[in-house]
Amino acid sequence: MNAGPGDAVASREGGDREAATGPQAPAARRIAERVLSCPDVAGLSRGPFGAVATYLPGDLVPGVAVRDDVIEVHVVARYGRPFPEVAELIRDAIGDLAAGRRMDVAIANVVTSDGRKK
Image (cartoon, rainbow, N blue to C red; front, side, top):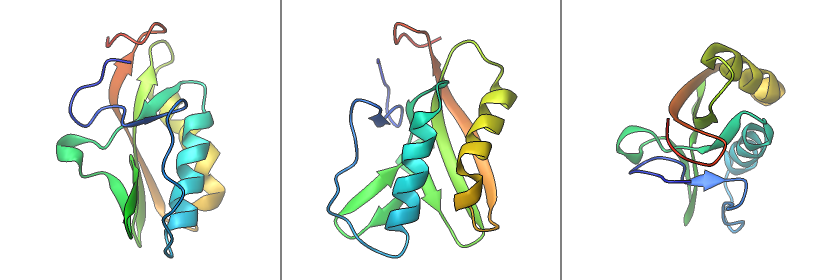
């Protein structure tokens, strides 16, 4: 996948380091895993300026920001399915982990099946 700054910093092929701990670590990691399991998601993106992440001691979960009132997820989508449907599939995949928080999903970029940006 050809990525620019802030794009596709985690994908199915590459994962997060496992060493981090903290109160948000399990939720953020499970959310990232579920998002990446969605077939229309090519990877996670840290968003503009690399700000979308859950920061943990000595580590981070890129593309997923878990806050008190909202879970923010930025993804690189595979070309094909309409974006609102991709976002809804992601919300369905992580809904039980949201614990009543609003779930904001942003499509940060799009790639074709061969990994080229659209």
